[in-house]
Amino acid sequence: MKDSRLYTLSEEEPAKAVVKMGVPLIAGMFIMVLYNLVDTYFIGLMRDDYQLAAVNLAYPVMMISIAISNLIATGASSLIARSLGSGDKEKADHTLTIGFEFTMIGGIIVTIIGLVFIDGIVTGLGAKDNTFLYTRDYAMILLLGSVFTMGNYTFGQLLRSEGSVRYSIMGMVAGTLSNIVLDPIFIFGLGLQIRGAAIATILGNAIGMLISVWIYLSKKSLLSISLKYLSPTSDIVKEIFWVGVPATLETLLTSIAYIVNNNLAVGYGELTVAAMGVAQKIMTFGNYIYQGFAAGTQPLMGYNYGAKNYDRMLAILRAGVLVVSGVEICVMICFGLFAPQLISLFSDSEVVVATGSKVLRTIMFILPFVGSISMSRTSFQAMGKPQYAFGITVVRQLILYVPLLIFMNHFIGFNGMIWAQPITEVIMMIVSVGMLYCMLISFKKENSNGNG
Image (cartoon, rainbow, N blue to C red):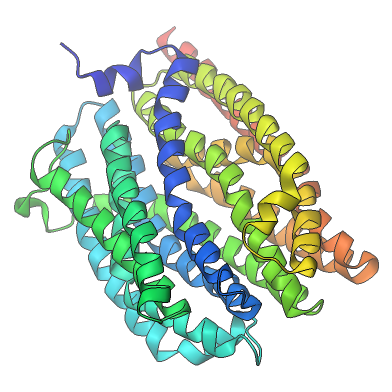
């Protein structure tokens, strides 16, 4: 009898498979988004908008750690799914073990480099006189816990690659609940303020990572870690980096765009940075919906690509686009209706609430479009064709968004700056979905001709 996880990847009705793989991830990501929202909320209770701004300014440090782990997680997950699709479980086990090994090494390297260059990093993030020390404290602790942040992210994604979605969210849930409990203890109880928020975040990630490790070591997963696979082979390393490096560069490019955005926002005052930070944190609820569906679709696409089932891949793409766009429209409407109430949960400053509401009611228009872009990118990665995924990101961030951001900010001002992203996402949805659809059609024709 076929394992239920493999049945979902190979045979379940496309829309049901997308929902079955995506919804648990979205639930887990909703919980995981609380890592930053909880920090933002409890720091907001101190009524110190400079510390609130510092959390937003330091966020790219977390993004960079995730970018490095994304190299390993995306590359290894793609190869695992394709190996399972072609029936090579031994290669999947070997890839999993190398993924664990590389994550630990990468976390140590990030910590060392980050601490050596901490002052330059904080300056580059856009921190000024009133926010510099707060940003430095928060960023330094995040860097010290890079191994845990990267391990929590990577190991969860590796579990998803084999279809173990339920297990993959256990670490997210436990880590976030720990963060919720520890935040007020460290921030208020121990009087550590923003440093306490960072410590609670790292401890939450550590708990999440250890739970994923326990799942593998207790043999609850489909795949297993083995000491005999600690020595990497050239073909596995090449495959991981071939898919993973472009994925990491995508995250780094996103971080660069985020930093450019923050540096432009500083020109409108540090309270504007705080307001944008709150709006962007609230937007993560919408972001994690499309990211969850995209992450859930990735093993579906990878498995069926390995099995050369292109008809199923086309059906999954169509179902995924319809599902994610429909759900995001509902989220967008909620954001539009309740923007002031949502922003006021984090600050009682009239400036922050007014500016944050305006930002949220503008950037929410990306939601019906950006999900399809994310699904297309992860599908290319799942197929072992990262150059197309990376191309989408380069065009999206460097060729369209950043120049448009600078141009519209210069000629239109703050309104132009916040409208740059929605305009970018509309264009990129048409380009990315069109590219993937045409590629799958060509694979289907080639396969039909080969069989004929």
